[in-house]
Amino acid sequence: MSTGKKFTLFPRKYGLFPFMWLIYIALPIFNIRNETGLKLILGYALIALFVVTYRQLYMVTGKAFSLWLALQMAIIVVMCMFYNPFNLYMGFFTANFIGWYTDHRKFNIAMIAFALVELVPLSLAVASISLNDFVFTLPFFAIMLASPFGIRSMVRRQNLEKELDLANQQIKELVKREERMRIARDLHDTLGHTLSLITLKSQLVEKLVLKDPERAQTEAGEIQRTSRAALRQVRELVSDMRAVSVAEGLAEAGEILRAADISLDIEGDAALESVSDLTQNILSLCIKEAVTNIVKHSEASRCFITISTTDAVVKVSVEDNGNVLETGDTIAAAAKVDPGNGLKGMAERLSLIDGSLSLSSGEKNGLRLLVTVPLIVKEQKEGVSA
Image 1 (cartoon, rainbow, N blue to C red):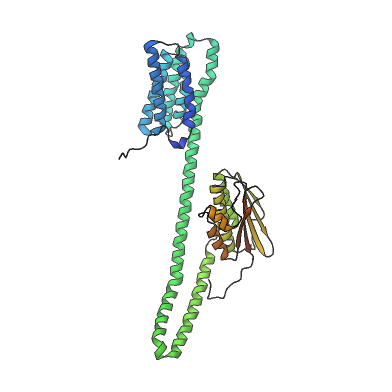
Image 2: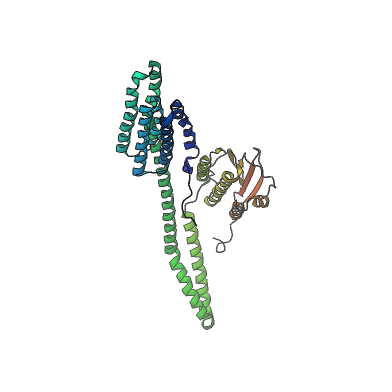
């Protein structure tokens, strides 16, 4: 079985861009059309080799990149000196690759060599071409020499954006890791001693239950008080944890949609100052899940998020203008369309705060997801639920 890599003409990350430029190879082919015999054959061979250098410059890096670029310049010199001076337009290919150099010294060397490759044949051909042709060539010649600077600036900006994205991702991971460590430390420091005490007292009650029932009852009451204290500590710890607000959730949703080239329209007050952190955290998770579904499945171009509040409930509507759900407007129907779309998880989260979830066809010819959460959630007795 062969383990070699599958041959590719150009790297997939560039898409159709390299293929579009190949159309300009028609220019040197047209310029040598009047040649005959061996010179014509050699001309076609040089053009074919030029195409090979063009492909290789997309595939290699480092020293090999410089060698293929030098070979490409040499072919341009030969094609201009021995065939047609207007083959200097082949330099537009080379100009693009010179702009890829990130090292300042290598870029300068390549630019000097490129300027000589273009200037020398042009200066030698001045006597053999008309004034009109020479004047017509000058603007293209200037653009050719200037384009590597623009391309280099664009490449540097793209590299900086990639580095910034990577740095932001690393920062997020570090924040998550630090938050996990902090929670682990707080749980250990807060509950470690309390749980050890409950374990010891329960063992003591087990021994005293037959020997000294009154003391066993006293110790059992102490265990109950200790467990309640532990429950209060857990609640305090949870309340100190940073919850994601609806406003922050909307900002994150905006980033996801922007990356997918989907516009976002937000209506209503995202502050929700009267809504608890727990409710806001669950609502933000629902918004993120709904937006993720839109990006994956809807083929929409716009997303509409509406937030409204009354004295009793908070409603968050997420709607798109993409594909309409034709199998019904219930969670079960949506699950049949895509069991992995996270709607079940959203419903489970909402059930913790007595919230509800519904799906329907939207006014924008897409799907509308409506989340409804009561502003007042009944609290259970202390000691039963945290």
